[in-house]
Length: 134
Image (tube, rainbow, N blue to C red; front, side):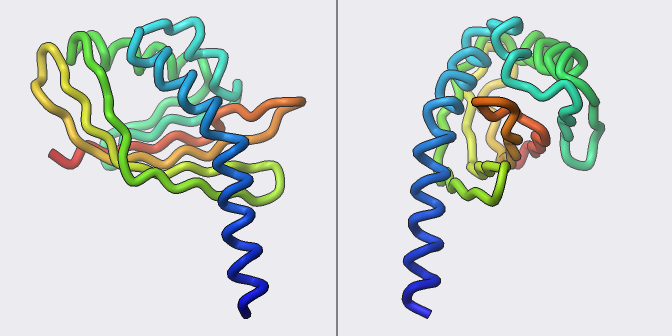
């Protein structure tokens, strides 16, 4: 059992080492509203789910949705907390809470789940799900 627990921890550390740098560049592009850069992080067959609301399919539609969402909230800067990284096969997963201080909507809090799929020598967001909690 101890070996299995140690293996789980090393897998989580490996997943974080592989995904965190990409995720940070992605997050900065979202904060800076660089939608062409953001689009490049999404898989062409990716899906964005706004939990209990709606979903969109494809990297271009996802980017358009995020840009429209950002237009409604105005300039914002998000802070990520409680991030957990995991991995299995060609997939890396990050779950976290976020708090975004926005120009038009005040502070928006929520949580998200992203599944990144290996494509060539990098990973792309294949499933992105978020919910607003307050």
